Image (tube, helix red, strand yellow):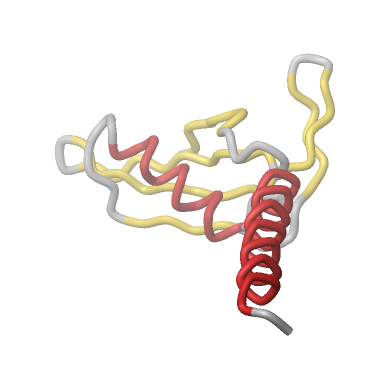
Length: 104
């Protein structure tokens, strides 16, 4: 095989691999770890957090007449020396926080 054919085959292989990875990244659902990371980043914009958790198995959630498949998790924040707990839902498809509920 000539050098040109080897270089061309390698280039096409790299291009095909790159395009396949882009497609997989686009269609891959959010993992629970990434969902928690995104939720924590969102809450940190409002102030520091002291604890967090997330269920690894998604569940069905109805919000504003729409049904989502979402991860449920929680965040604890210390505000004025008092712990405040929040429960949240993160959409499995997009990774967006779709609901936040303050719990006591």
